[in-house]
Image 1 (cartoon, rainbow, N blue to C red):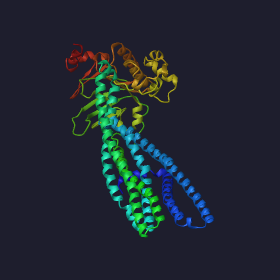
Image 2: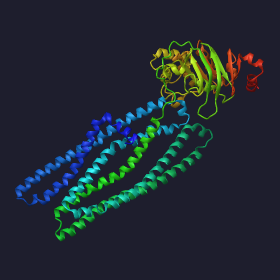
Image 3: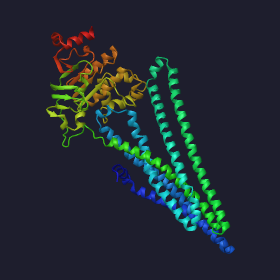
Image 4: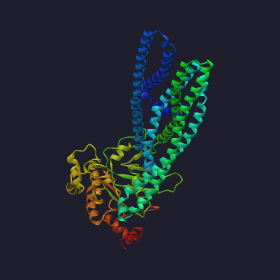
Length: 577
């Protein structure tokens, strides 16, 4: 059996009881659909010829029996539709939880090459298609096979000639449906592409609405959207044309089968080879026969969509995290904060150029180290190696003499606080965003962290203070305010090692001063790495490292580096020229 198919079937295991009941009720519903026409045949061929009183009694009894069968069939269909869908929703829940947890394990290297929208479709659209297949697929096959085979066996036992007449158009119906199904599938795929384009356009427009309005380009945006919208409308028209042909054709074939059976039956009755009751029974079986044929044809598309979605799901699940805990990884506790880079080299991908080459660096516990250098020399990359966002290609990074690859990722990252230039705040309140630094913190600790970050005053001036909703990505706050909330978050975390990644480069002078004061307060008695864009912000640093493509080119204090008249001096005069 195909490996993916085996894995797919394994998701039924926790719900096998519900699955077996679903199959049981599907079989029961199919059996009832086959039994009722036989009862009708018995009534028309035998009961109506009995004495009036006996016939009336039997008709009443059989009527009650058929009503009971309809009631059972009703419950069967209710169970299939309700509990069957609940089962598929639970499977979808399990798979979504599994893929989300897997996403959390994957490293930055994975996300560097992925689009968020594409990953979102794996966790929404793909999973819906998969679970629709896992719910409806087995029951549709069971119901269709039982109905078609059962109807065929019963019909051929009643009248072989009428059976041939009834099944004569079935192959043509299959070919017609297969042709239109293919056309519909391609048309609907085009629809999905068009709606994806429109969604992308809307997201782009709404994300950049401030730019649109600042250039007064609303008209241009409407025109762009109209072109996309018209393309989608045209694609929809095509798909509905094929859908119309598909459904109209299948309905016509159902009616044609009825006409063929009726004409053939009348002819055979006139020849005395077929009974009227047999013709009536055949007419009742036509719907029992044609509905599952449509279902089987629809199943081919459902299977393709669902199984393709599952293959995409398995593609993601088969990606092994390239950064994970070693088998005997130890917890990192009681950290002093000494950091060593021992002959460290790094490249993002195999066969690509090295970003860092043979870096040797010792940083004492509590030391404040500034990194400067032109764009692209690897300042952020160097700092990203400390929390193991990426693994070194060569050499080792050590904290307190312990190789970070021998430590658990959680305990390592719990000891490191990062403040970045591009602050990410989550949807929710100010309080929620600060508490993200230590989710179990008490309210007084959150407020204390905000005060240490010089954020308490502006937070209290907001409409609802700490309970103010900050909007998507903190859109209701200024750049300086967002940055101070992110610093408060790190204050609350209270780590012994800090990384400031150009944390003030995007701020105005006033905001930069407030944030700089907060950062200096946070850095006290902690091992701190500062990636500096503006050299003025790190002039007081006792140790400045100048990074070039060859590695650490210069090292020392601000005045010492100026006196060397090397790379740092050129950079300083360029910035202050």
